Length: 272
Image (tube, rainbow, N blue to C red):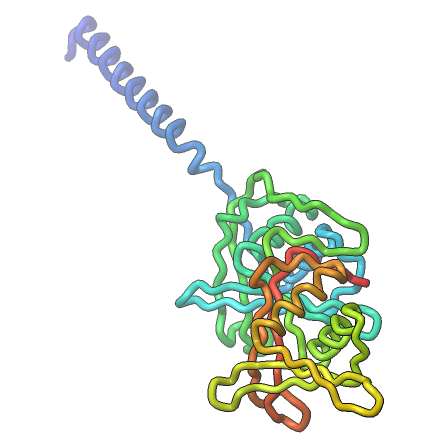
Protein backbone atom coordinates (compact mmCIF):
# COMPACT_ATOMS: atom_id res chain seq x y z
CA UNK A 1 0.00 0.00 0.00
CA UNK A 2 1.35 3.42 -0.98
CA UNK A 3 1.64 5.82 1.94
CA UNK A 4 -0.74 8.80 1.88
CA UNK A 5 2.00 11.40 1.53
CA UNK A 6 3.63 9.63 -1.40
CA UNK A 7 0.23 9.15 -3.05
CA UNK A 8 -0.51 12.86 -2.84
CA UNK A 9 2.94 13.67 -4.19
CA UNK A 10 2.42 11.36 -7.17
CA UNK A 11 -1.00 12.92 -7.93
CA UNK A 12 0.51 16.39 -7.74
CA UNK A 13 3.34 15.41 -10.07
CA UNK A 14 0.91 13.86 -12.56
CA UNK A 15 -1.27 16.99 -12.43
CA UNK A 16 1.75 19.24 -13.07
CA UNK A 17 2.82 17.09 -16.03
CA UNK A 18 -0.70 17.16 -17.46
CA UNK A 19 -0.92 20.90 -16.93
CA UNK A 20 2.42 21.36 -18.70
CA UNK A 21 1.21 19.25 -21.65
CA UNK A 22 -2.00 21.31 -21.91
CA UNK A 23 -0.01 24.57 -21.90
CA UNK A 24 2.36 23.27 -24.57
CA UNK A 25 -0.60 22.17 -26.72
CA UNK A 26 -2.26 25.58 -26.25
CA UNK A 27 0.91 27.37 -27.36
CA UNK A 28 1.18 25.13 -30.41
CA UNK A 29 -2.42 25.80 -31.37
CA UNK A 30 -1.95 29.54 -30.94
CA UNK A 31 1.20 29.50 -33.05
CA UNK A 32 -0.60 27.70 -35.87
CA UNK A 33 -4.00 29.38 -35.47
CA UNK A 34 -3.58 31.65 -38.52
CA UNK A 35 -2.70 28.63 -40.64
CA UNK A 36 -5.46 26.45 -39.19
CA UNK A 37 -8.11 29.15 -39.60
CA UNK A 38 -7.56 29.54 -43.37
CA UNK A 39 -10.68 28.58 -45.28
CA UNK A 40 -10.41 27.23 -48.80
CA UNK A 41 -13.02 28.21 -51.40
CA UNK A 42 -13.64 26.21 -54.58
CA UNK A 43 -14.95 27.56 -57.88
CA UNK A 44 -16.47 25.66 -60.78
CA UNK A 45 -15.89 26.91 -64.32
CA UNK A 46 -19.40 28.39 -64.42
CA UNK A 47 -18.70 30.27 -61.18
CA UNK A 48 -15.38 31.55 -62.52
CA UNK A 49 -17.10 32.83 -65.67
CA UNK A 50 -19.87 34.47 -63.64
CA UNK A 51 -17.30 36.24 -61.43
CA UNK A 52 -15.38 37.49 -64.48
CA UNK A 53 -18.61 38.86 -65.98
CA UNK A 54 -19.42 40.55 -62.69
CA UNK A 55 -15.96 42.14 -62.53
CA UNK A 56 -16.12 43.47 -66.09
CA UNK A 57 -19.44 45.07 -65.18
CA UNK A 58 -17.82 46.53 -62.03
CA UNK A 59 -15.05 47.97 -64.23
CA UNK A 60 -17.65 49.97 -66.16
CA UNK A 61 -19.16 47.66 -68.79
CA UNK A 62 -22.85 48.38 -69.35
CA UNK A 63 -23.15 46.24 -72.48
CA UNK A 64 -24.35 42.65 -72.58
CA UNK A 65 -21.52 40.17 -72.14
CA UNK A 66 -22.07 37.42 -74.69
CA UNK A 67 -19.71 34.78 -73.35
CA UNK A 68 -16.54 34.19 -71.36
CA UNK A 69 -14.00 31.50 -72.17
CA UNK A 70 -11.12 30.52 -69.89
CA UNK A 71 -7.84 29.05 -71.06
CA UNK A 72 -5.42 27.44 -68.61
CA UNK A 73 -2.38 25.21 -69.13
CA UNK A 74 -1.49 22.96 -66.18
CA UNK A 75 2.12 22.56 -67.31
CA UNK A 76 3.09 26.16 -68.07
CA UNK A 77 0.60 27.91 -65.77
CA UNK A 78 -0.48 30.18 -68.63
CA UNK A 79 -3.91 31.63 -67.88
CA UNK A 80 -6.17 33.96 -69.84
CA UNK A 81 -9.83 34.66 -70.39
CA UNK A 82 -11.66 36.00 -73.43
CA UNK A 83 -14.74 38.17 -72.93
CA UNK A 84 -17.06 38.87 -75.88
CA UNK A 85 -19.25 41.98 -75.67
CA UNK A 86 -22.44 42.49 -77.63
CA UNK A 87 -22.52 46.05 -78.90
CA UNK A 88 -24.50 47.63 -81.70
CA UNK A 89 -23.23 46.33 -85.05
CA UNK A 90 -20.15 44.66 -83.53
CA UNK A 91 -19.11 41.98 -81.06
CA UNK A 92 -15.58 42.83 -79.86
CA UNK A 93 -13.53 40.27 -77.96
CA UNK A 94 -11.19 41.27 -75.15
CA UNK A 95 -8.52 38.99 -73.71
CA UNK A 96 -7.57 39.29 -70.04
CA UNK A 97 -4.13 38.17 -68.86
CA UNK A 98 -3.40 36.02 -65.78
CA UNK A 99 -3.25 38.89 -63.28
CA UNK A 100 -6.48 40.38 -64.64
CA UNK A 101 -8.28 37.04 -64.44
CA UNK A 102 -7.18 36.66 -60.82
CA UNK A 103 -8.36 40.19 -60.03
CA UNK A 104 -11.63 39.62 -61.88
CA UNK A 105 -12.45 36.41 -60.00
CA UNK A 106 -11.62 38.13 -56.70
CA UNK A 107 -13.80 41.15 -57.55
CA UNK A 108 -16.71 38.94 -58.63
CA UNK A 109 -16.42 36.72 -55.56
CA UNK A 110 -16.29 39.76 -53.27
CA UNK A 111 -19.44 41.17 -54.87
CA UNK A 112 -21.13 37.85 -54.05
CA UNK A 113 -20.05 38.12 -50.42
CA UNK A 114 -17.07 35.75 -50.54
CA UNK A 115 -13.88 37.84 -50.48
CA UNK A 116 -10.71 35.97 -51.46
CA UNK A 117 -7.03 36.67 -51.90
CA UNK A 118 -6.45 36.80 -55.70
CA UNK A 119 -2.82 35.73 -55.24
CA UNK A 120 -4.02 32.49 -53.60
CA UNK A 121 -6.03 31.37 -56.63
CA UNK A 122 -4.90 28.02 -57.99
CA UNK A 123 -6.38 26.93 -61.30
CA UNK A 124 -6.68 23.39 -62.65
CA UNK A 125 -7.51 22.27 -66.16
CA UNK A 126 -9.60 19.11 -65.96
CA UNK A 127 -9.48 17.24 -69.23
CA UNK A 128 -12.72 15.48 -70.20
CA UNK A 129 -14.03 15.23 -66.66
CA UNK A 130 -16.91 17.71 -66.71
CA UNK A 131 -20.52 17.32 -67.82
CA UNK A 132 -20.74 14.65 -70.54
CA UNK A 133 -16.95 14.24 -70.38
CA UNK A 134 -16.12 17.80 -71.46
CA UNK A 135 -12.94 19.59 -70.39
CA UNK A 136 -13.21 22.49 -67.98
CA UNK A 137 -11.20 24.75 -65.65
CA UNK A 138 -11.73 24.99 -61.90
CA UNK A 139 -9.99 26.89 -59.12
CA UNK A 140 -9.47 27.09 -55.37
CA UNK A 141 -8.53 30.11 -53.25
CA UNK A 142 -8.07 31.23 -49.67
CA UNK A 143 -10.98 33.19 -48.24
CA UNK A 144 -10.16 36.55 -46.70
CA UNK A 145 -10.66 40.26 -47.17
CA UNK A 146 -7.85 41.69 -49.33
CA UNK A 147 -7.63 45.17 -50.81
CA UNK A 148 -8.09 44.79 -54.57
CA UNK A 149 -6.65 47.01 -57.30
CA UNK A 150 -9.10 49.79 -58.05
CA UNK A 151 -9.89 51.36 -61.41
CA UNK A 152 -10.94 54.88 -62.34
CA UNK A 153 -14.33 54.48 -63.97
CA UNK A 154 -15.30 56.59 -66.95
CA UNK A 155 -18.82 56.87 -68.37
CA UNK A 156 -19.33 54.58 -71.36
CA UNK A 157 -15.94 52.89 -70.97
CA UNK A 158 -14.49 49.73 -69.45
CA UNK A 159 -11.34 50.51 -67.46
CA UNK A 160 -9.05 47.56 -66.79
CA UNK A 161 -6.45 47.01 -64.09
CA UNK A 162 -3.51 46.84 -66.49
CA UNK A 163 -3.91 46.33 -70.24
CA UNK A 164 -6.35 43.97 -71.92
CA UNK A 165 -5.91 42.76 -75.49
CA UNK A 166 -8.43 43.39 -78.26
CA UNK A 167 -8.23 41.56 -81.56
CA UNK A 168 -8.92 43.63 -84.67
CA UNK A 169 -10.00 41.82 -87.81
CA UNK A 170 -9.20 42.89 -91.36
CA UNK A 171 -12.38 44.96 -91.74
CA UNK A 172 -11.72 46.81 -88.49
CA UNK A 173 -8.12 47.59 -89.47
CA UNK A 174 -9.25 48.93 -92.84
CA UNK A 175 -11.98 51.04 -91.22
CA UNK A 176 -9.53 52.57 -88.74
CA UNK A 177 -7.01 53.44 -91.47
CA UNK A 178 -9.77 55.03 -93.55
CA UNK A 179 -10.94 57.01 -90.51
CA UNK A 180 -7.40 58.19 -89.78
CA UNK A 181 -6.96 59.36 -93.38
CA UNK A 182 -10.22 61.29 -93.24
CA UNK A 183 -9.24 62.87 -89.93
CA UNK A 184 -5.95 63.94 -91.54
CA UNK A 185 -7.90 65.82 -94.24
CA UNK A 186 -7.54 63.24 -97.02
CA UNK A 187 -10.35 61.76 -99.12
CA UNK A 188 -9.82 58.00 -99.10
CA UNK A 189 -11.64 55.98 -101.75
CA UNK A 190 -10.65 52.63 -100.28
CA UNK A 191 -7.94 50.96 -98.22
CA UNK A 192 -6.08 47.80 -99.15
CA UNK A 193 -4.00 45.70 -96.77
CA UNK A 194 -1.08 43.60 -97.89
CA UNK A 195 1.94 41.72 -96.57
CA UNK A 196 5.37 40.68 -97.75
CA UNK A 197 5.11 36.99 -98.69
CA UNK A 198 8.70 36.35 -97.57
CA UNK A 199 8.93 38.38 -94.36
CA UNK A 200 5.13 38.52 -93.82
CA UNK A 201 5.36 42.20 -92.88
CA UNK A 202 1.90 43.83 -93.03
CA UNK A 203 1.29 47.20 -94.70
CA UNK A 204 -1.59 49.35 -95.90
CA UNK A 205 -2.24 51.43 -99.00
CA UNK A 206 -4.74 54.30 -98.95
CA UNK A 207 -6.23 54.97 -102.37
CA UNK A 208 -7.32 58.60 -102.58
CA UNK A 209 -10.36 59.98 -104.33
CA UNK A 210 -8.63 62.36 -106.75
CA UNK A 211 -10.47 62.90 -110.06
CA UNK A 212 -8.27 62.54 -113.10
CA UNK A 213 -5.34 60.91 -111.27
CA UNK A 214 -4.47 57.93 -109.16
CA UNK A 215 -2.82 58.83 -105.86
CA UNK A 216 -1.97 56.54 -102.98
CA UNK A 217 -0.44 56.75 -99.53
CA UNK A 218 1.57 53.73 -98.43
CA UNK A 219 1.95 52.79 -94.76
CA UNK A 220 4.74 50.37 -93.86
CA UNK A 221 4.34 48.14 -90.78
CA UNK A 222 5.54 50.64 -88.16
CA UNK A 223 3.57 53.48 -89.77
CA UNK A 224 0.46 51.29 -89.90
CA UNK A 225 0.78 50.42 -86.21
CA UNK A 226 1.32 54.07 -85.22
CA UNK A 227 -1.68 55.13 -87.32
CA UNK A 228 -3.90 52.51 -85.68
CA UNK A 229 -2.75 53.53 -82.19
CA UNK A 230 -3.35 57.23 -82.80
CA UNK A 231 -6.79 56.59 -84.27
CA UNK A 232 -7.84 54.29 -81.45
CA UNK A 233 -6.74 56.81 -78.83
CA UNK A 234 -8.64 59.53 -80.68
CA UNK A 235 -11.74 57.32 -80.29
CA UNK A 236 -11.34 57.02 -76.53
CA UNK A 237 -8.99 54.06 -76.10
CA UNK A 238 -5.86 54.23 -73.96
CA UNK A 239 -3.28 52.38 -76.03
CA UNK A 240 0.32 52.74 -74.79
CA UNK A 241 3.21 53.37 -77.15
CA UNK A 242 4.02 50.14 -78.95
CA UNK A 243 0.64 48.74 -77.94
CA UNK A 244 -0.48 47.81 -81.48
CA UNK A 245 0.90 44.77 -83.29
CA UNK A 246 -0.19 44.47 -86.91
CA UNK A 247 0.41 40.96 -88.18
CA UNK A 248 0.10 38.59 -91.05
CA UNK A 249 -2.64 36.08 -90.26
CA UNK A 250 -2.75 33.02 -92.53
CA UNK A 251 -6.03 31.45 -93.49
CA UNK A 252 -8.42 33.95 -91.86
CA UNK A 253 -9.37 36.19 -94.74
CA UNK A 254 -12.29 35.87 -97.17
CA UNK A 255 -12.52 32.33 -98.47
CA UNK A 256 -9.87 31.15 -95.99
CA UNK A 257 -7.10 33.29 -97.51
CA UNK A 258 -4.41 35.11 -95.55
CA UNK A 259 -4.96 38.65 -94.34
CA UNK A 260 -3.72 41.40 -92.03
CA UNK A 261 -5.06 41.75 -88.48
CA UNK A 262 -3.89 43.47 -85.30
CA UNK A 263 -3.66 42.91 -81.56
CA UNK A 264 -4.22 45.99 -79.41
CA UNK A 265 -3.18 46.48 -75.81
CA UNK A 266 -5.47 48.98 -74.11
CA UNK A 267 -6.18 50.16 -70.59
CA UNK A 268 -9.59 51.50 -71.63
CA UNK A 269 -12.24 50.12 -73.96
CA UNK A 270 -14.93 52.58 -75.12
CA UNK A 271 -18.32 51.00 -75.77
CA UNK A 272 -19.55 53.71 -78.12
